Image (tube, rainbow, N blue to C red):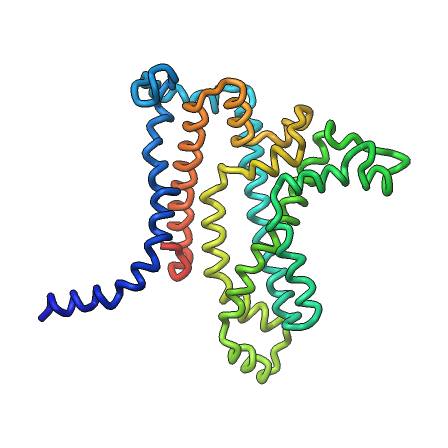
Length: 304
């Protein structure tokens, strides 16, 4: 009887398993099959011998990341920008989501929502040209309209680029991030807010005592997911937006841009593969560590 019951259960779930199949196939091909190539990071690739017959290099491919004179700069920039982006991204996305929720289904909300979603839908190449349209020293909007008496050579002065990159990242990502928090707010039981209003709670008190506490699990998950990529950077943001200007390397050089330039110059896929392995392993360790810290502080909000 027990085996017949299990067989029936499988038949009942078969349509749902069939619906999952395309996504599982995509996940396997896109996320799991490439993991087989991890051994490339430990090989000295010789195209005449082929990938499999190339000599083993041990950990030599990892050395180029740390023995270069730019190692400190690219690690500092990668970590520094990502910590700043995570911190500002969470605060601004949550704030925007709460504001949009307070606006509600009004005409203003219908106008604002497409505007905040639009930047994330365009490619970083287009963003780079938009930024160039503002910063070009000859025809740029800022130099010609605002600073016409004292133009600035934006693409040769690294002092301004930490602020520029932060503003561009916020402009492109905050709207999309707020949608996730808006979905979480929509799932909060409306009776909680009604009860709070009956008790005389102001809107600010409803936000601080209902909305934010119930958003905490989503915030924790988003932070943990961001931490997993803290050693990765948005290649388009750091390479295309500054127009690959050598004068800006001190403030725009990250692990990803350095590896790309090394790959273009040396054509050594072993070194670029080693950088990806390093980023993945460090990201994995950081997520596990951060999740354990969350589990000790507040076990209900841990990711796993």
